[in-house]
Image 1 (cartoon, rainbow, N blue to C red):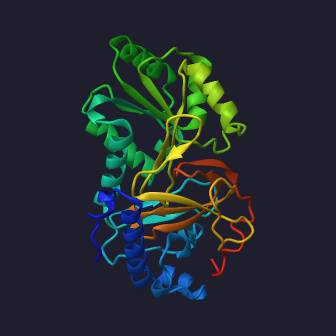
Image 2: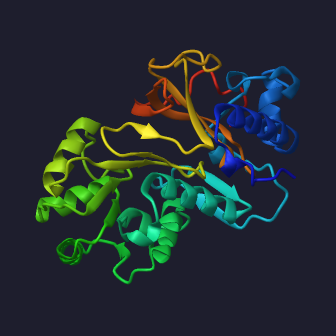
Image 3: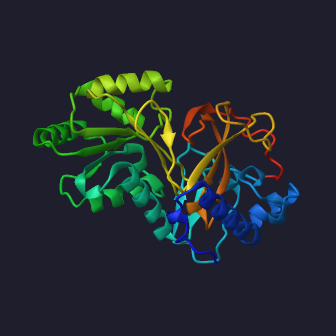
Length: 326
């Protein structure tokens, strides 16, 4: 077994590298799917001394295999949303306390004490299905806010309008976290001028609306809510950590998470900063599944470790990564 306590105590780049190499060795030895992938690349822990040397498992393996580094019983299976008939990702979680510590520690770092907030969750398409890691997190944040005004909203836009206005009148610090299309629906019916409410979009049109570029989307949302900036959450079923943006779509990771970019045409080549490439995520909270994931997102990483998401790979998926039949 590997101790998870050190993961959330990382303070420096040296700490991160040491823990990442430790987790890599553990997953190489205990995750049969990841071990097979590394073997095909002829990569062994004895060959790895820096982050760029670590193989990143294509995210599609979460659709086709049980990606596990632990023999403990599975406590929860998180699943991705998808169109009817499509194959969805599944993240088998053997220790929910690691997930909880990850999002609670990250929230405290970026936003402070959860009990200072009323948490309003406008997540209709997530509430309508089981197995959402976002719903799990939002539900826990709502409970931990310890405020009766906190809660979920499906499609009750008018009720939500009255709730937000009442909280604003009290000067109550509020977090409204919502899926993109639902936030747009809300402001089309009820424009706001908010002073005490953070608007956080989680992404996702899911075929409900025309896709918008981030700049256009955030301009519409800032105008509709009467706020200066729109916050964003970057997370996915396959990760137990989230990055957050407090404006302009620039995301910051918690200390136990890091983003690298790979060459879009050569998946094994890691870019220098500021060049657009495929996003590779190191999420050390994924200690019991796989912490090294090549996503289908395109983006840029800056010298200070922040990153932007600028698009996604097309239906051809991640080129150059598919060394194993899915």
